[in-house]
Image 1 (cartoon, rainbow, N blue to C red):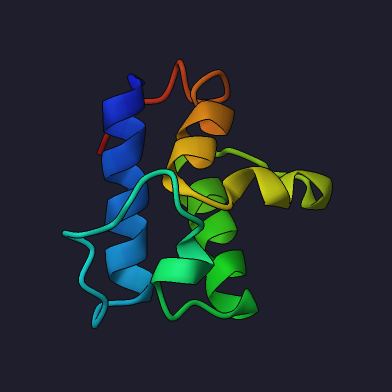
Image 2 (cartoon, rainbow, N blue to C red):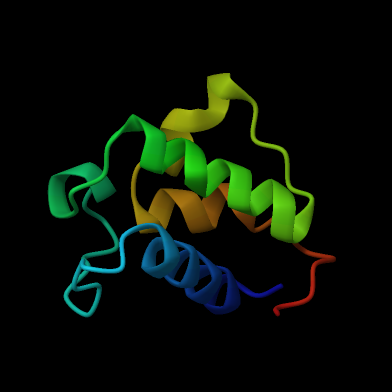
Length: 86
């Protein structure tokens, strides 16, 4: 899966988790928590959705890699190369 496809997957997951958030102005380099009303359970939901939808396991020690859109896409790109966008 290409980085732009991964970005769209993350946007889709964020839309499901936080439907009231405006994601159109999301800045890719800024941490999600600085831009969105996400709590720790929402963050875990992101991790669980990645596992459920794409069989991508994110170890707890790697959670900081998912802080922003840029870091999330960078982290997931090698892990999702064989995944197909749904």
